[in-house]
Amino acid sequence: MSSRIAEVRGALALDSRGSPTVKARVVTEGGAVGTAIAPSGASKSVKEAVELRDGGTRWAGRGVGIAIANINEVIAPRLKGIDAREQRFIDRAMIALDGTPDKSRLGGNAIVAVSLAVAKAAAAQLNVPLYSYLGGVRSRVLPTPFMNVINGGAHAGNELSFQEFMIVPVGADAFSEALRIAVEVYYVLKAYLKEKYGKGAVNVGDEGGFAPPMRRNEEALEALMQSIKRAGYSESHVLLGIDAAASQFYSNGSYLVDGRELSAGELRDLYLEVLSRYPIVYLEDPYEEGDFASFAELTSRVKRALIVGDDLYSTNLKYLRRGLEVRATNAALLKVNQAGTLSESIDFYELARGSGLRVVVSHRSGDSEDSFIADLAVALGSPIKTGAPARGERTAKYNRLLEIEEELGGTAEYLGSNFV
Image (cartoon, rainbow, N blue to C red; front, side):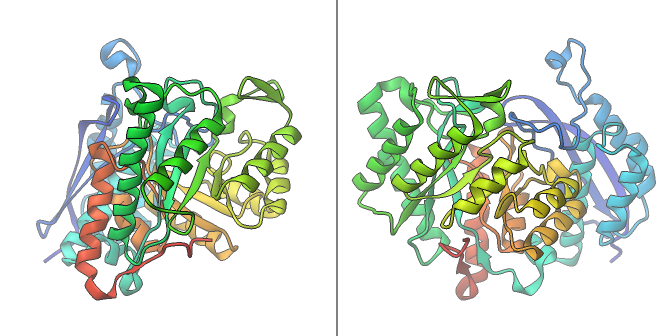
């Protein structure tokens, strides 16, 4: 049966915030179908592929009609008849059609949806799981999840300056066991927050984490430590992570943290103190996205945690190369929609891993039921960051990972603490 592309269609979908987004459907001549939905971030970097929006009054200006039309009228005619297995050729064809450095003509949201749908259609045509199609026979390692269970910053309406506070279940022999441990801690955390802050404290933010009325970042860390202990676990089972998203609280050369204005040096000292007091193994975007020097200084002084570049790199090879020159971080986040195509994302992964950095596959705060990144994490043998074990757009990824673990059977492995 032919894997040549017979049809490419763009359509409207809603993301987890109720915003319009782009859905792409690719059909091969052999009848295989791949569909994908473009996600959307809240704390976006200026470095990432541009999300094309309609403006105007409809959908509060966030419509994606132009992006969808670009799929149907510009991209579809170009891709028809090309073998869906030619992922790199297809992605380059769309990049050439767009003709801009940031995919602003056709829209990064249009291009990424088609790129991922093509990969799904190719896998379906070959009748192989997506993770196997992307990663080959070595794809058997289930990812360590970095689970955002307390939301702050741009993801919540409280006064926490740091954006995400995560639990990292490492003390398990299988992904399903790690997920169980994390869910049990999540249950206990809900009870703890309700008891201490009232019923409103268990409302959830964009990524399924609770958004309690906290003012100091240390309150969130203490809540996590207490919940881990009350759930019957210790540091050997569950570790912690932070996404500071520092660009969101940076202004005019200083950082506003816990009501105090801090210089980059003072913020470094704060991070070092926090890292010495809590079992934190993951620290993302500790400085604003242009300060490669401060990233590098902190990374040189931290030995047991991942210092992760998200806004710093934005899944962009140009900025990754700059970071590698100064050894800015020891890890990088991979968000496919930041790059705009699957091929560019794989190139980013290969350069980062080949240079000794750990890569973490990530969702976006405005996500969907599309579970593509679950398969991608297994294909790459990477940890995954995809929110709390709540809300359908987050649990879709966890449920897909459970399916993959079952499919792999006795050959499945769990990454656990081997991400450092």
